Length: 497
Image (cartoon, helix red, strand yellow):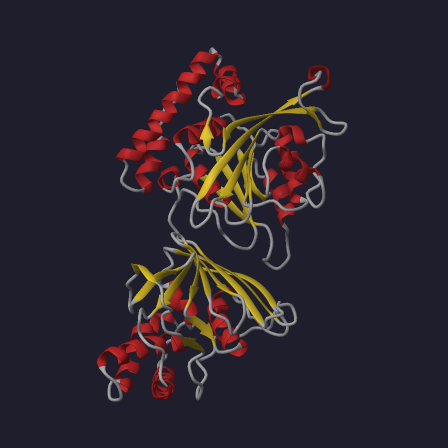
Protein backbone atom coordinates (compact mmCIF):
# COMPACT_ATOMS: atom_id res chain seq x y z
CA UNK A 1 0.00 0.00 0.00
CA UNK A 2 1.15 3.50 -0.64
CA UNK A 3 1.75 5.78 2.36
CA UNK A 4 -1.28 7.64 3.75
CA UNK A 5 -1.97 10.99 2.17
CA UNK A 6 -4.38 13.83 2.49
CA UNK A 7 -6.14 15.86 -0.13
CA UNK A 8 -3.89 18.77 -0.85
CA UNK A 9 -5.06 22.32 -1.32
CA UNK A 10 -4.62 23.82 -4.78
CA UNK A 11 -1.07 25.01 -5.25
CA UNK A 12 -0.51 28.71 -4.87
CA UNK A 13 1.41 31.07 -7.13
CA UNK A 14 0.85 28.91 -10.21
CA UNK A 15 -1.22 29.45 -13.33
CA UNK A 16 -4.12 27.17 -14.23
CA UNK A 17 -3.12 23.52 -14.50
CA UNK A 18 -4.64 23.27 -17.97
CA UNK A 19 -5.03 25.29 -21.12
CA UNK A 20 -8.14 25.77 -23.23
CA UNK A 21 -7.83 26.32 -26.95
CA UNK A 22 -10.38 28.00 -29.22
CA UNK A 23 -12.73 26.02 -31.39
CA UNK A 24 -11.31 24.54 -34.58
CA UNK A 25 -13.11 25.43 -37.76
CA UNK A 26 -15.77 22.75 -38.05
CA UNK A 27 -19.44 22.22 -38.76
CA UNK A 28 -21.45 22.53 -35.54
CA UNK A 29 -23.64 19.46 -35.11
CA UNK A 30 -24.86 20.05 -31.55
CA UNK A 31 -24.90 22.70 -28.84
CA UNK A 32 -24.39 20.76 -25.61
CA UNK A 33 -25.18 23.55 -23.16
CA UNK A 34 -24.18 23.45 -19.51
CA UNK A 35 -22.58 25.96 -17.17
CA UNK A 36 -20.56 27.31 -20.09
CA UNK A 37 -21.21 26.86 -23.83
CA UNK A 38 -20.07 23.51 -25.21
CA UNK A 39 -20.40 22.39 -28.79
CA UNK A 40 -19.78 19.24 -30.81
CA UNK A 41 -18.41 19.89 -34.27
CA UNK A 42 -17.42 17.77 -37.22
CA UNK A 43 -14.43 18.25 -39.45
CA UNK A 44 -14.03 15.64 -42.16
CA UNK A 45 -14.62 12.27 -40.51
CA UNK A 46 -13.60 13.48 -37.04
CA UNK A 47 -15.61 15.03 -34.21
CA UNK A 48 -14.55 17.74 -31.78
CA UNK A 49 -15.91 18.44 -28.30
CA UNK A 50 -15.27 22.09 -27.58
CA UNK A 51 -15.61 23.56 -24.11
CA UNK A 52 -16.36 27.28 -24.25
CA UNK A 53 -18.01 27.07 -27.64
CA UNK A 54 -16.53 29.71 -29.89
CA UNK A 55 -14.94 31.66 -27.04
CA UNK A 56 -11.34 32.66 -27.68
CA UNK A 57 -8.42 31.27 -25.72
CA UNK A 58 -7.33 33.25 -22.66
CA UNK A 59 -5.09 36.21 -23.40
CA UNK A 60 -1.91 36.82 -21.44
CA UNK A 61 -3.74 39.45 -19.39
CA UNK A 62 -6.64 37.07 -18.67
CA UNK A 63 -4.22 34.31 -17.65
CA UNK A 64 -2.57 36.69 -15.19
CA UNK A 65 -6.01 37.65 -13.81
CA UNK A 66 -6.93 33.97 -13.52
CA UNK A 67 -3.74 33.26 -11.55
CA UNK A 68 -4.44 36.12 -9.12
CA UNK A 69 -8.08 35.00 -8.77
CA UNK A 70 -6.95 31.43 -8.14
CA UNK A 71 -4.62 32.54 -5.34
CA UNK A 72 -7.36 34.68 -3.80
CA UNK A 73 -9.88 31.82 -3.94
CA UNK A 74 -7.40 29.46 -2.28
CA UNK A 75 -6.87 32.00 0.50
CA UNK A 76 -10.61 32.29 1.09
CA UNK A 77 -11.27 28.55 1.01
CA UNK A 78 -8.33 27.78 3.28
CA UNK A 79 -10.01 29.82 6.01
CA UNK A 80 -13.06 27.56 5.78
CA UNK A 81 -13.39 24.50 8.02
CA UNK A 82 -14.76 22.50 5.08
CA UNK A 83 -12.62 20.07 3.14
CA UNK A 84 -11.83 21.47 -0.28
CA UNK A 85 -13.74 19.59 -2.96
CA UNK A 86 -16.41 19.82 -5.64
CA UNK A 87 -19.02 20.61 -2.98
CA UNK A 88 -17.45 24.07 -2.82
CA UNK A 89 -17.59 24.67 -6.58
CA UNK A 90 -20.28 27.37 -6.50
CA UNK A 91 -18.53 29.23 -3.69
CA UNK A 92 -15.20 29.08 -5.54
CA UNK A 93 -16.76 30.30 -8.76
CA UNK A 94 -18.50 33.22 -7.07
CA UNK A 95 -15.32 34.20 -5.25
CA UNK A 96 -13.32 34.12 -8.47
CA UNK A 97 -15.97 36.13 -10.33
CA UNK A 98 -15.80 38.79 -7.63
CA UNK A 99 -12.07 39.25 -8.26
CA UNK A 100 -12.35 39.13 -12.03
CA UNK A 101 -15.35 41.40 -12.62
CA UNK A 102 -13.30 44.54 -12.13
CA UNK A 103 -10.88 43.56 -14.91
CA UNK A 104 -13.06 42.16 -17.72
CA UNK A 105 -16.62 42.17 -18.99
CA UNK A 106 -19.31 39.96 -17.41
CA UNK A 107 -19.23 37.20 -20.02
CA UNK A 108 -15.47 36.71 -19.87
CA UNK A 109 -15.44 36.97 -16.06
CA UNK A 110 -18.05 34.21 -15.82
CA UNK A 111 -16.06 32.01 -18.19
CA UNK A 112 -12.69 32.52 -16.46
CA UNK A 113 -14.24 32.06 -13.00
CA UNK A 114 -15.64 28.72 -14.21
CA UNK A 115 -12.12 27.64 -15.19
CA UNK A 116 -10.66 28.84 -11.90
CA UNK A 117 -13.29 26.98 -9.85
CA UNK A 118 -12.53 23.69 -11.61
CA UNK A 119 -8.83 24.29 -11.13
CA UNK A 120 -9.09 25.01 -7.40
CA UNK A 121 -11.78 22.69 -6.05
CA UNK A 122 -12.27 20.26 -8.92
CA UNK A 123 -10.03 18.07 -11.05
CA UNK A 124 -9.18 20.63 -13.69
CA UNK A 125 -10.30 19.61 -17.19
CA UNK A 126 -11.38 16.18 -15.90
CA UNK A 127 -14.19 17.60 -13.76
CA UNK A 128 -15.18 19.96 -16.58
CA UNK A 129 -15.79 16.97 -18.85
CA UNK A 130 -17.46 14.95 -16.08
CA UNK A 131 -20.27 17.51 -16.10
CA UNK A 132 -21.49 15.74 -19.25
CA UNK A 133 -21.05 12.27 -17.75
CA UNK A 134 -24.42 11.00 -19.00
CA UNK A 135 -23.10 11.09 -22.57
CA UNK A 136 -19.34 10.93 -22.13
CA UNK A 137 -18.38 7.30 -21.61
CA UNK A 138 -14.64 7.76 -21.24
CA UNK A 139 -12.05 10.50 -20.78
CA UNK A 140 -8.73 9.62 -22.42
CA UNK A 141 -5.44 11.31 -21.55
CA UNK A 142 -2.65 10.03 -23.80
CA UNK A 143 0.05 12.50 -22.79
CA UNK A 144 0.28 15.35 -20.27
CA UNK A 145 0.73 17.94 -23.01
CA UNK A 146 -1.63 16.58 -25.68
CA UNK A 147 -5.32 17.40 -26.24
CA UNK A 148 -7.61 15.26 -24.08
CA UNK A 149 -9.92 12.90 -25.95
CA UNK A 150 -13.33 11.62 -24.95
CA UNK A 151 -15.51 8.74 -26.11
CA UNK A 152 -19.02 10.09 -26.61
CA UNK A 153 -22.11 7.88 -26.54
CA UNK A 154 -23.43 9.46 -29.76
CA UNK A 155 -20.35 10.59 -31.69
CA UNK A 156 -17.65 8.12 -30.69
CA UNK A 157 -14.14 9.39 -30.08
CA UNK A 158 -13.85 13.18 -30.03
CA UNK A 159 -10.87 15.48 -29.61
CA UNK A 160 -11.36 18.23 -27.01
CA UNK A 161 -9.80 21.67 -26.78
CA UNK A 162 -8.46 20.94 -23.27
CA UNK A 163 -4.99 19.82 -22.22
CA UNK A 164 -2.87 19.80 -19.09
CA UNK A 165 0.12 22.12 -18.86
CA UNK A 166 2.43 19.26 -17.95
CA UNK A 167 2.95 16.01 -16.03
CA UNK A 168 2.99 17.75 -12.64
CA UNK A 169 -0.39 19.39 -13.32
CA UNK A 170 -1.79 16.06 -14.52
CA UNK A 171 -0.69 14.25 -11.36
CA UNK A 172 -2.06 16.97 -9.12
CA UNK A 173 -5.53 16.88 -10.73
CA UNK A 174 -5.67 13.10 -10.96
CA UNK A 175 -4.64 12.61 -7.34
CA UNK A 176 -7.42 14.92 -6.22
CA UNK A 177 -9.81 12.64 -8.12
CA UNK A 178 -8.54 9.33 -6.68
CA UNK A 179 -8.21 10.70 -3.14
CA UNK A 180 -11.56 9.18 -2.13
CA UNK A 181 -10.33 5.73 -3.20
CA UNK A 182 -7.25 6.14 -0.96
CA UNK A 183 -4.95 5.97 -3.96
CA UNK A 184 -2.09 8.18 -5.06
CA UNK A 185 -0.22 8.28 -8.35
CA UNK A 186 3.46 8.89 -7.72
CA UNK A 187 6.99 7.47 -7.79
CA UNK A 188 6.11 4.63 -5.39
CA UNK A 189 2.88 3.77 -7.22
CA UNK A 190 3.35 4.73 -10.89
CA UNK A 191 0.40 2.54 -11.97
CA UNK A 192 -2.99 2.73 -10.25
CA UNK A 193 -6.52 1.40 -10.67
CA UNK A 194 -9.32 3.03 -8.72
CA UNK A 195 -13.04 3.51 -8.62
CA UNK A 196 -14.49 6.79 -7.40
CA UNK A 197 -18.27 6.85 -7.48
CA UNK A 198 -19.25 5.88 -11.01
CA UNK A 199 -15.78 6.57 -12.43
CA UNK A 200 -13.32 3.76 -13.13
CA UNK A 201 -9.76 5.08 -13.36
CA UNK A 202 -6.55 3.59 -14.71
CA UNK A 203 -3.47 5.80 -14.81
CA UNK A 204 0.28 5.46 -15.34
CA UNK A 205 3.29 7.76 -15.27
CA UNK A 206 6.97 7.30 -16.07
CA UNK A 207 8.80 4.97 -16.29
CA UNK A 208 5.84 2.95 -17.62
CA UNK A 209 4.11 5.67 -19.62
CA UNK A 210 6.59 6.75 -22.27
CA UNK A 211 4.62 9.95 -22.93
CA UNK A 212 5.01 10.92 -19.26
CA UNK A 213 1.41 10.27 -18.22
CA UNK A 214 -1.59 8.35 -19.49
CA UNK A 215 -5.05 7.80 -18.02
CA UNK A 216 -8.43 6.35 -18.86
CA UNK A 217 -11.46 7.47 -16.84
CA UNK A 218 -14.52 5.40 -17.69
CA UNK A 219 -17.82 6.95 -16.63
CA UNK A 220 -21.02 5.06 -15.97
CA UNK A 221 -24.20 6.31 -14.43
CA UNK A 222 -25.87 4.50 -11.57
CA UNK A 223 -29.07 3.67 -13.41
CA UNK A 224 -30.23 0.08 -13.55
CA UNK A 225 -29.91 -1.11 -17.15
CA UNK A 226 -32.83 -3.22 -18.36
CA UNK A 227 -33.67 -4.99 -21.59
CA UNK A 228 -35.53 -1.87 -22.73
CA UNK A 229 -32.23 0.04 -22.85
CA UNK A 230 -30.77 -2.58 -25.21
CA UNK A 231 -33.79 -2.39 -27.51
CA UNK A 232 -33.81 1.42 -27.51
CA UNK A 233 -30.10 1.52 -28.41
CA UNK A 234 -30.51 -1.06 -31.16
CA UNK A 235 -28.20 -3.49 -29.36
CA UNK A 236 -30.59 -6.46 -29.23
CA UNK A 237 -34.01 -7.47 -30.54
CA UNK A 238 -36.97 -8.93 -28.66
CA UNK A 239 -36.45 -12.45 -30.06
CA UNK A 240 -32.82 -12.69 -28.93
CA UNK A 241 -33.73 -11.37 -25.47
CA UNK A 242 -36.66 -13.78 -25.10
CA UNK A 243 -34.36 -16.64 -26.09
CA UNK A 244 -31.76 -15.65 -23.45
CA UNK A 245 -34.54 -15.22 -20.87
CA UNK A 246 -35.71 -18.80 -21.41
CA UNK A 247 -32.10 -20.04 -21.31
CA UNK A 248 -31.59 -18.36 -17.94
CA UNK A 249 -34.80 -19.89 -16.57
CA UNK A 250 -33.40 -23.27 -17.57
CA UNK A 251 -30.16 -22.65 -15.67
CA UNK A 252 -27.97 -22.67 -18.77
CA UNK A 253 -24.38 -21.43 -18.60
CA UNK A 254 -23.78 -18.30 -20.67
CA UNK A 255 -20.62 -16.48 -21.77
CA UNK A 256 -20.82 -13.01 -23.30
CA UNK A 257 -17.74 -12.42 -25.44
CA UNK A 258 -16.46 -9.63 -27.62
CA UNK A 259 -13.73 -6.99 -27.98
CA UNK A 260 -13.30 -4.14 -25.47
CA UNK A 261 -16.16 -1.60 -25.27
CA UNK A 262 -18.51 -3.82 -27.29
CA UNK A 263 -21.26 -3.79 -24.63
CA UNK A 264 -20.54 -7.08 -22.84
CA UNK A 265 -21.03 -5.79 -19.30
CA UNK A 266 -24.07 -3.74 -20.29
CA UNK A 267 -25.75 -6.88 -21.68
CA UNK A 268 -24.80 -8.88 -18.59
CA UNK A 269 -26.28 -6.18 -16.34
CA UNK A 270 -29.48 -6.07 -18.40
CA UNK A 271 -29.93 -9.85 -18.14
CA UNK A 272 -30.29 -9.48 -14.36
CA UNK A 273 -33.80 -8.26 -15.07
CA UNK A 274 -34.68 -11.83 -16.07
CA UNK A 275 -33.33 -13.43 -12.87
CA UNK A 276 -36.15 -14.81 -10.68
CA UNK A 277 -36.52 -12.74 -7.52
CA UNK A 278 -36.15 -15.71 -5.15
CA UNK A 279 -32.80 -16.85 -6.58
CA UNK A 280 -29.65 -16.42 -4.54
CA UNK A 281 -27.22 -14.75 -6.94
CA UNK A 282 -23.54 -14.22 -6.13
CA UNK A 283 -21.65 -11.65 -8.17
CA UNK A 284 -17.87 -11.45 -8.23
CA UNK A 285 -15.98 -8.51 -9.68
CA UNK A 286 -12.49 -7.18 -9.31
CA UNK A 287 -11.78 -3.97 -7.45
CA UNK A 288 -14.23 -1.90 -9.46
CA UNK A 289 -17.98 -2.26 -9.64
CA UNK A 290 -19.32 -2.21 -13.20
CA UNK A 291 -22.36 -4.47 -12.91
CA UNK A 292 -25.58 -2.53 -12.44
CA UNK A 293 -28.06 -5.06 -11.08
CA UNK A 294 -31.66 -4.70 -10.12
CA UNK A 295 -32.05 -4.00 -6.43
CA UNK A 296 -34.98 -6.35 -5.71
CA UNK A 297 -33.14 -9.66 -6.00
CA UNK A 298 -33.82 -10.83 -2.46
CA UNK A 299 -30.68 -12.90 -2.05
CA UNK A 300 -28.10 -11.00 -4.07
CA UNK A 301 -24.57 -11.13 -2.64
CA UNK A 302 -21.70 -9.11 -4.13
CA UNK A 303 -18.05 -10.08 -3.61
CA UNK A 304 -14.83 -8.38 -4.67
CA UNK A 305 -12.19 -10.53 -6.30
CA UNK A 306 -9.01 -8.48 -5.88
CA UNK A 307 -7.55 -5.13 -5.01
CA UNK A 308 -8.61 -5.06 -1.35
CA UNK A 309 -5.44 -5.75 0.57
CA UNK A 310 -4.54 -8.85 -1.41
CA UNK A 311 -6.55 -11.14 0.88
CA UNK A 312 -8.32 -12.96 -1.95
CA UNK A 313 -8.13 -13.03 -5.70
CA UNK A 314 -10.96 -13.70 -8.15
CA UNK A 315 -10.18 -17.43 -8.34
CA UNK A 316 -10.38 -17.80 -4.56
CA UNK A 317 -13.62 -15.86 -4.45
CA UNK A 318 -15.19 -18.18 -7.03
CA UNK A 319 -14.29 -21.11 -4.77
CA UNK A 320 -15.63 -19.26 -1.72
CA UNK A 321 -18.85 -18.36 -3.55
CA UNK A 322 -19.58 -22.02 -4.24
CA UNK A 323 -19.57 -22.56 -0.45
CA UNK A 324 -22.34 -19.98 -0.04
CA UNK A 325 -24.89 -22.17 -1.83
CA UNK A 326 -25.73 -19.89 -4.76
CA UNK A 327 -28.48 -20.56 -7.26
CA UNK A 328 -26.50 -18.63 -9.87
CA UNK A 329 -22.94 -17.35 -10.06
CA UNK A 330 -22.06 -14.22 -12.02
CA UNK A 331 -18.43 -13.18 -12.63
CA UNK A 332 -17.97 -9.73 -14.15
CA UNK A 333 -15.12 -10.89 -16.38
CA UNK A 334 -12.93 -13.98 -16.62
CA UNK A 335 -9.30 -13.75 -17.69
CA UNK A 336 -7.32 -16.44 -15.89
CA UNK A 337 -7.45 -19.38 -13.49
CA UNK A 338 -10.82 -18.30 -12.06
CA UNK A 339 -12.35 -19.54 -15.34
CA UNK A 340 -11.32 -23.12 -14.51
CA UNK A 341 -13.05 -22.92 -11.12
CA UNK A 342 -16.15 -21.35 -12.69
CA UNK A 343 -16.49 -24.27 -15.10
CA UNK A 344 -15.93 -26.74 -12.27
CA UNK A 345 -18.85 -25.12 -10.44
CA UNK A 346 -20.93 -25.30 -13.62
CA UNK A 347 -20.34 -29.04 -13.73
CA UNK A 348 -21.50 -29.26 -10.11
CA UNK A 349 -24.85 -27.75 -11.13
CA UNK A 350 -24.32 -24.08 -10.27
CA UNK A 351 -25.31 -22.02 -13.38
CA UNK A 352 -22.99 -19.20 -14.31
CA UNK A 353 -22.91 -16.07 -16.45
CA UNK A 354 -19.76 -14.13 -17.26
CA UNK A 355 -17.97 -12.05 -19.88
CA UNK A 356 -14.63 -12.50 -21.61
CA UNK A 357 -12.60 -10.75 -24.28
CA UNK A 358 -12.54 -12.36 -27.70
CA UNK A 359 -12.21 -10.98 -31.21
CA UNK A 360 -14.26 -13.85 -32.66
CA UNK A 361 -17.19 -16.00 -31.63
CA UNK A 362 -18.11 -19.66 -32.05
CA UNK A 363 -15.28 -22.18 -31.68
CA UNK A 364 -12.74 -19.39 -31.12
CA UNK A 365 -14.32 -18.85 -27.70
CA UNK A 366 -13.84 -22.54 -26.85
CA UNK A 367 -10.22 -22.41 -28.05
CA UNK A 368 -9.50 -19.40 -25.86
CA UNK A 369 -10.98 -21.18 -22.84
CA UNK A 370 -8.71 -24.18 -23.38
CA UNK A 371 -5.35 -22.36 -23.46
CA UNK A 372 -3.39 -20.27 -21.00
CA UNK A 373 -4.14 -18.26 -18.99
CA UNK A 374 -7.68 -19.71 -18.61
CA UNK A 375 -6.70 -23.33 -19.25
CA UNK A 376 -10.15 -24.84 -18.61
CA UNK A 377 -10.01 -28.63 -18.29
CA UNK A 378 -11.41 -30.19 -21.47
CA UNK A 379 -13.46 -32.54 -19.29
CA UNK A 380 -15.44 -29.60 -17.88
CA UNK A 381 -15.91 -27.63 -21.09
CA UNK A 382 -19.14 -29.46 -21.84
CA UNK A 383 -21.09 -27.36 -19.35
CA UNK A 384 -20.90 -24.36 -21.69
CA UNK A 385 -24.35 -23.98 -23.22
CA UNK A 386 -24.48 -20.58 -24.93
CA UNK A 387 -22.07 -17.88 -26.07
CA UNK A 388 -23.16 -14.40 -27.08
CA UNK A 389 -20.78 -12.47 -29.32
CA UNK A 390 -20.95 -8.68 -29.11
CA UNK A 391 -19.64 -6.35 -31.77
CA UNK A 392 -18.80 -2.65 -31.93
CA UNK A 393 -20.01 -1.16 -35.21
CA UNK A 394 -18.50 2.30 -34.88
CA UNK A 395 -19.49 5.44 -33.02
CA UNK A 396 -21.89 4.38 -30.27
CA UNK A 397 -23.44 1.36 -32.01
CA UNK A 398 -22.98 -1.90 -30.13
CA UNK A 399 -24.84 -4.96 -31.23
CA UNK A 400 -25.59 -8.47 -30.13
CA UNK A 401 -24.06 -9.90 -33.27
CA UNK A 402 -24.30 -13.67 -32.74
CA UNK A 403 -25.68 -16.27 -30.35
CA UNK A 404 -24.13 -19.73 -30.46
CA UNK A 405 -25.40 -22.97 -28.94
CA UNK A 406 -22.93 -25.69 -27.98
CA UNK A 407 -24.31 -29.24 -28.17
CA UNK A 408 -21.83 -31.61 -26.57
CA UNK A 409 -21.82 -35.14 -27.93
CA UNK A 410 -20.24 -38.29 -26.60
CA UNK A 411 -17.93 -40.26 -28.87
CA UNK A 412 -20.72 -42.77 -29.46
CA UNK A 413 -22.96 -39.99 -30.81
CA UNK A 414 -20.53 -38.12 -32.99
CA UNK A 415 -20.05 -40.02 -36.20
CA UNK A 416 -19.19 -37.18 -38.58
CA UNK A 417 -21.09 -34.59 -36.54
CA UNK A 418 -19.41 -31.84 -34.58
CA UNK A 419 -15.85 -30.77 -33.83
CA UNK A 420 -13.68 -33.01 -31.64
CA UNK A 421 -12.21 -31.25 -28.62
CA UNK A 422 -8.97 -33.15 -28.03
CA UNK A 423 -9.69 -36.27 -25.99
CA UNK A 424 -12.98 -34.86 -24.73
CA UNK A 425 -16.42 -35.10 -26.32
CA UNK A 426 -17.09 -33.34 -29.59
CA UNK A 427 -19.26 -30.28 -29.95
CA UNK A 428 -21.90 -29.38 -32.51
CA UNK A 429 -22.06 -25.60 -32.95
CA UNK A 430 -25.32 -23.96 -33.98
CA UNK A 431 -26.05 -20.29 -34.52
CA UNK A 432 -29.36 -18.83 -33.36
CA UNK A 433 -28.54 -15.17 -34.10
CA UNK A 434 -26.31 -14.31 -37.04
CA UNK A 435 -25.08 -10.80 -37.84
CA UNK A 436 -27.69 -9.40 -35.47
CA UNK A 437 -30.62 -11.25 -37.08
CA UNK A 438 -32.62 -13.87 -35.21
CA UNK A 439 -33.44 -16.92 -37.31
CA UNK A 440 -37.17 -17.37 -36.73
CA UNK A 441 -37.03 -21.05 -37.67
CA UNK A 442 -34.01 -21.83 -35.51
CA UNK A 443 -35.80 -21.77 -32.17
CA UNK A 444 -37.81 -24.93 -32.92
CA UNK A 445 -34.59 -26.93 -33.24
CA UNK A 446 -32.72 -25.05 -30.51
CA UNK A 447 -31.21 -26.45 -27.36
CA UNK A 448 -33.41 -24.09 -25.35
CA UNK A 449 -36.65 -25.37 -26.91
CA UNK A 450 -35.62 -28.99 -26.31
CA UNK A 451 -34.63 -28.36 -22.69
CA UNK A 452 -37.77 -26.33 -21.93
CA UNK A 453 -40.04 -29.07 -23.30
CA UNK A 454 -38.24 -31.71 -21.21
CA UNK A 455 -38.26 -29.64 -18.02
CA UNK A 456 -41.95 -28.73 -18.27
CA UNK A 457 -42.94 -32.17 -19.64
CA UNK A 458 -44.47 -30.52 -22.69
CA UNK A 459 -44.41 -31.05 -26.40
CA UNK A 460 -41.99 -29.03 -28.48
CA UNK A 461 -44.91 -27.03 -29.85
CA UNK A 462 -45.66 -25.70 -26.35
CA UNK A 463 -42.06 -24.54 -25.97
CA UNK A 464 -42.35 -22.62 -29.22
CA UNK A 465 -45.59 -21.00 -28.03
CA UNK A 466 -43.90 -20.02 -24.76
CA UNK A 467 -41.08 -18.38 -26.70
CA UNK A 468 -43.56 -16.45 -28.86
CA UNK A 469 -45.51 -15.45 -25.75
CA UNK A 470 -42.34 -14.00 -24.17
CA UNK A 471 -41.46 -12.07 -27.32
CA UNK A 472 -44.90 -10.42 -27.31
CA UNK A 473 -44.68 -9.80 -23.57
CA UNK A 474 -41.37 -7.97 -23.96
CA UNK A 475 -42.82 -5.83 -26.72
CA UNK A 476 -45.78 -4.83 -24.55
CA UNK A 477 -43.54 -4.06 -21.56
CA UNK A 478 -41.24 -1.99 -23.76
CA UNK A 479 -44.10 0.07 -25.19
CA UNK A 480 -46.09 0.55 -21.98
CA UNK A 481 -43.50 0.99 -19.22
CA UNK A 482 -42.39 4.33 -17.86
CA UNK A 483 -38.88 3.82 -16.60
CA UNK A 484 -36.61 0.92 -15.62
CA UNK A 485 -38.32 0.22 -12.28
CA UNK A 486 -41.67 -0.39 -13.96
CA UNK A 487 -39.96 -2.65 -16.51
CA UNK A 488 -38.46 -4.76 -13.72
CA UNK A 489 -41.75 -4.90 -11.82
CA UNK A 490 -43.56 -6.25 -14.88
CA UNK A 491 -40.85 -8.81 -15.60
CA UNK A 492 -41.00 -10.12 -12.04
CA UNK A 493 -44.75 -10.66 -12.42
CA UNK A 494 -44.48 -12.78 -15.56
CA UNK A 495 -46.13 -16.22 -15.32
CA UNK A 496 -44.71 -19.07 -17.37
CA UNK A 497 -46.94 -21.71 -19.02
